[in-house]
Image (tube, rainbow, N blue to C red; front, side, top):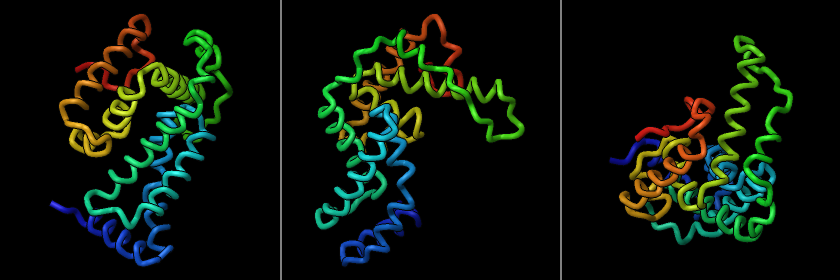
Length: 202
């Protein structure tokens, strides 16, 4: 069943195909956060994620004529996932020379407390967990990382993740299972660090 939001997306795509730039900008405004977050989680670098997100929307705009229907959000996320994959290939993992232990040493920069009800200690712990999660994600193979990001971090259903990644639901579940298992192995001595951030239990 098509939701009102999905129908609105399709209307915006139709207008964009007719050259309505404002309509396409509305799609960008609606999904730029999701696209950036996916790119950042895959790439682990904010500047690279910004570049990949921008290229994703440019690619989507150039591909409008070939969009044959379906879920617009999933289509945009698929483009972003592919763009991030291309960026990873270009980088050839040259900036991944540091070991996981060395990366742990980068955690601990000063934290700004934006929520006045939150203590500076709690804000630091939250920031530390978020940074650690990103570092750990980069330890996963790319295929496992993308599936796990979509389901565990972006709260997609398995079916939605399968649509984005153009895989079967069974393959998505298998990749997530292997990704969680690897994270559990890495965190066997410090599992509390990711409490509340990722579902490490089946």
